[in-house]
Length: 116
Image 1 (cartoon, rainbow, N blue to C red):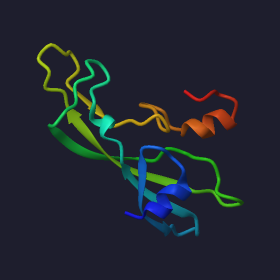
Image 2: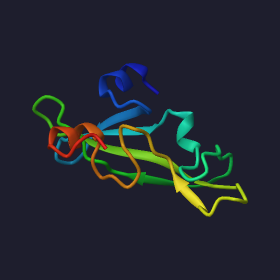
Image 3: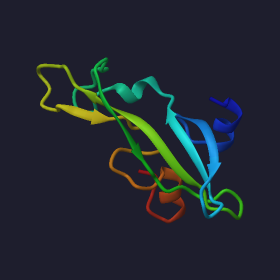
Image 4: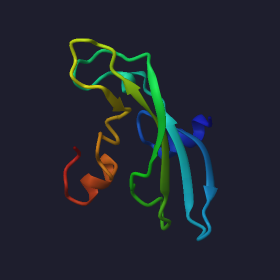
């Protein structure tokens, strides 16, 4: 992973693995989760150690200069093994891209939708 590219991207909790251009010349930034708290069940707050599968999401983000940038976030779906928790599984989330959001927090703020 490139720490420099992750710093340039500026999305806390995410690390850039690589950047490539799609067929239209748009940069695609492939990111992974870089926050251990992302494995914490949002319901019971217990950290999971039981991965279930990998999923890839494509949250929309602000442009970089004049260019649109596409994100490809490869993240884990975890099993919650707490017998007292009703949640069976959950995907990683970070404050910059909350669960079930299709936009980064900064794009939501820029569009007038607030940060969360």
